[in-house]
Amino acid sequence: MSINGKAILVIDDDGARLRALNKVLSSEGAAVTSVGSVGEAMEDLTSRLGAFDLVITDLRMPLLGGQTVL
Image 1 (cartoon, helix red, strand yellow):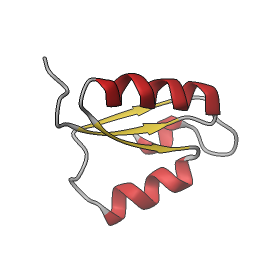
Image 2: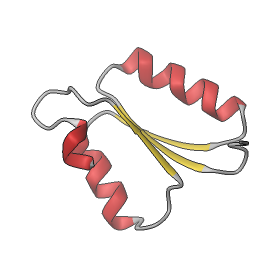
Image 3: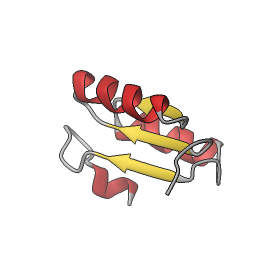
Image 4: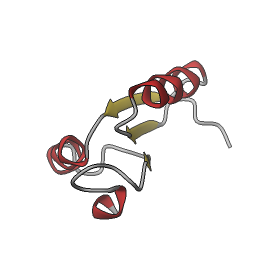
């Protein structure tokens, strides 16, 4: 499966992991939106409803975890 041209939302509170995922996915042609918290992700998901083909999230984060997104 090709991710070229796919819109991907990546959610992680670990900046290094967020940058690494962004770099790898972008290099494969994906349009990546990276956010560091569930709050930011929820804003993107609600304001851009249906805009993402895939969401990758860390499940364990401070305050709200990735399970909230699911």
